[in-house]
Length: 257
Image 1 (tube, rainbow, N blue to C red):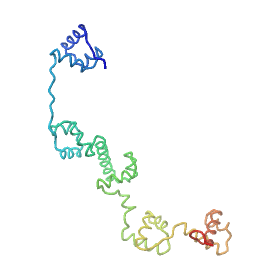
Image 2: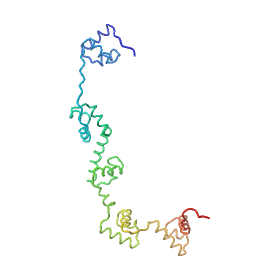
Image 3: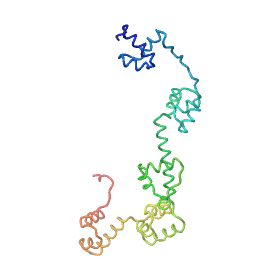
Image 4: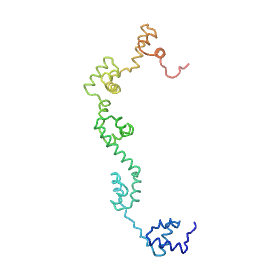
């Protein structure tokens, strides 16, 4: 690298700019050189006394991690513990509490407060997610992580059935109603109905199974396939497939010769 050499006029200009109070960076830009070159010349001429480097004591890592968990910045922790910002940064990154992690925790804390507010207002998970701008699954994860109560919709549609409602569901299932029809009649989720019935050992037919059984009964009574299609609202090709599957027994694998 070529060494910068100043002539008499340049040295005189450096001295005059320094006496005017210009900084080393400004003088270096004026003479198109590095500011360390100007600093070296001023030290040689006795116009600049370098400040001795002060090594700050290191703070205990446990205290730094505790303050980072409270979402303090590097500068705030360094001022509180009287240590260098570099030391605080090294300890934080090693503990997985760097700048990116702190931002993520701050964002999650803001989301948690908004989720708690939405739950108190009676909103559903989908409405809260649309209001915050994140997915419903992420809303549920943050809710569980921060021990927030479930939404009113979750309690009414996903929680266990109450005793009076459960007895009514069991009675309707024993009368031959399926889980979907029970859910529509009681204005609750049919998945919740089937889960409660399976827990008590009651198996309900699906809507497709009832339709297939109805098609089979009408076909056994001698009705034509077009008449069965008009009576059930099922397409004629689907009726042919259903009857063909009922006639053909299910076999596992290929028949051995």
